[in-house]
Image (cartoon, rainbow, N blue to C red):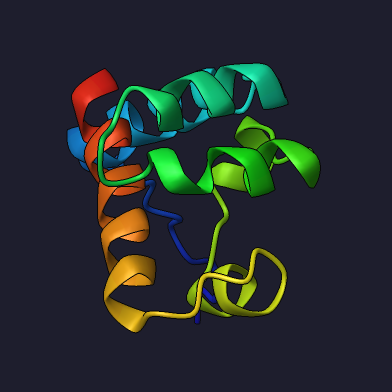
Length: 96
């Protein structure tokens, strides 16, 4: 009895590949780049100072969580946290 198995390689969906490329580009952003992005958005402008103070760069931005926004960046309103996370995802999609 032959016990060998064939390994099937599955291509990731094109969206996943493009998203990964976008994230890699954003990860190169320094804290000034993140602050500039925040400053250009009326909804996010108020958080520019705290993001800059805590040196949030692109690598941190692309891994941002609700808990980090609440605990570390002191974004208290849940709606604001959701809006920030949504805008980060929108930024990634725009780069794709």
